[in-house]
Image (tube, rainbow, N blue to C red; front, side, top):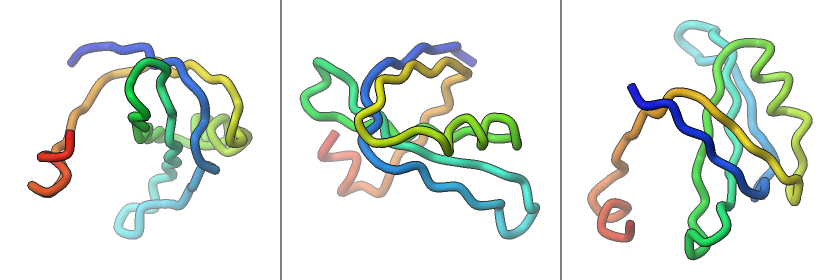
Length: 82
């Protein structure tokens, strides 16, 4: 699995909830990347320490995040827009 580094601006307030089936904590945040024509990447982090770090982010904060890359395609309508 590739390891990536994404740097950009927090585009939306982070959301966090435990998974309903397992109770495993996770958080997600949208990152707007410069030069990506307005593309916002949805970053999902797992584990209580990572969730705490993501929850303190505010829209407009500069951020860099590194970790393992896992790609998932959305519905066909979303894939066509990419």
